[in-house]
Length: 340
Ligand code: TXA
Ligand code: MG
Image (cartoon, rainbow, N blue to C red):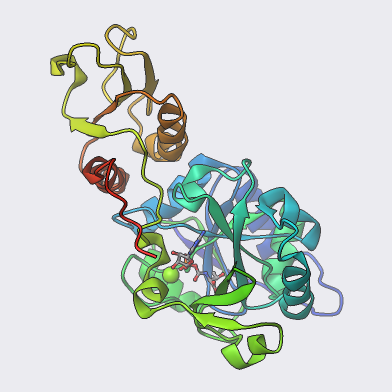
């Protein structure tokens, strides 16, 4: 794929649509991914409500595992369609939003069910933010729906703060980079969660603890939690034991064992399984990644004795899927692995 870089010529007071933002919106509508400037770092954006489009983000970044993504809202009205604000901390959340949105500030809240599992990596929470960058704002408003966007860099590298940097990282992996010059902050947004009425800082960023402290008590998450929230032990793991197999046809169920199959290989009928979910009928890893968390949730809700999951090929997005399945299979169902 050829990666094009197009300069965004924007005019702050008028916020006019430019050729670059129009191209970006068109691609996003087609389920493509596009690198866009934000006030913190460049983001790699996709339709947050389209799991297949989101799977392309993981593929382009070469993330060996899924990590939850930030959902960028077109306006504040979208907040409660994506996340639950609840009543307990509503006042505090509303004050924080009034002060820091749009801006480099991300809130982790309980998610609404329309958010695909691949966006939250199976978590029950979702990270939301509203960017203040005029180009990002123009694109997300014209698109009219939230955009999922991690930093536009390959896995394990530093975030990109210029279009040139994005090109070095993602050349030939994405169709378009919208260039609006260097990012204002150059570090990623501050991420907070509200826990027991306190403001828990999950990632330090442009909005400082000092700024936040005038809104409530600050609770610094410990360093391990800051570095990789997606790795938290509270990360989604099915309650139902999960067994990984190469091919379910050679799987022998125990007596009276009620199991479900999460299939990769083509299956004709349910047979020995209570139910079957096929990750991708056409054995497309992108589609499999997009379906993974939803199917795991659905099978887990059946309260069966076992979920049998077939290994997917260990290439491309398959490595991320396998990593997630392996972690799900290592869980001991009777051991609480969530230290407070
Ligand atoms: O400034 C930013 O936030 C940039 C721009 C593009 O918006 N985005 C960004 O995304 O830094 P990313 O994916 O590189 O980092 C997002 C972080 C990850 O560490 C992820 O684990 C965490 O946010 N995160 C996302 N959803 C979460 C959730 N539900 N709970 C806890 N952490 C979450
Ligand atoms: Mg990042």
